[in-house]
Image 1 (cartoon, rainbow, N blue to C red):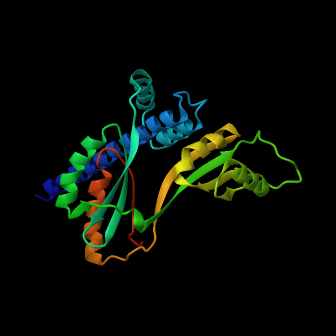
Image 2 (tube, rainbow, N blue to C red):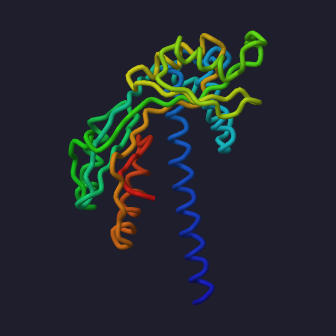
Image 3 (cartoon, helix red, strand yellow):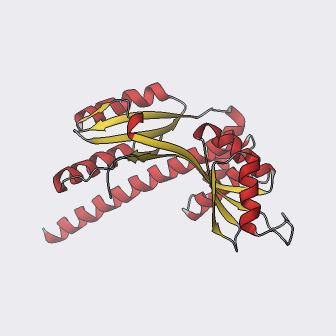
Length: 246
């Protein structure tokens, strides 16, 4: 019996791992499709956002044939994925913003509703709970030169003002990596301005930050983690933000 129990446990762990891998790959491939749309090209040489997403996919061991098939399918049928936002209240004082990237939002919401309600959640407007902003991580190409009298920090600060960013922070001078902050409605436009002017956009995100994070009891924390996992594996879920204090 002990051997049978161990075998059953191994099968269970493998099933969980396979499920996680499938969900991860699906999310990565959606990011590739979104990068194609936003960068308006299926050629990584012409689309730095796509190139960045492909690099991430390779690092996560997504098979190269799978990546190539995704590029070919998108080029052939031009399926359009769009981002949507759902506000959720879980139990009494947990508020969640769920970012969905899908070509069938009504279908996603219909599938998600039963799970959310069964878990103790409801759809509500939670925008007043969060502050939001656009965030971009970018790297300035080595071929872009600037006057010797000007420091790298001065260069990127000047670029931030010229391109319409609200704030900028140097992450690493040696790799020329920088974080830009902007109004979320300007996120896509700022990405394009940066790319045109010698930056490689490594990641961009519409971030939501809770004004007053809450600390959960141990019991509620455990229950919320179960709910969160169910939410994360829903097809189309890209990011989840909440007001829970770490």
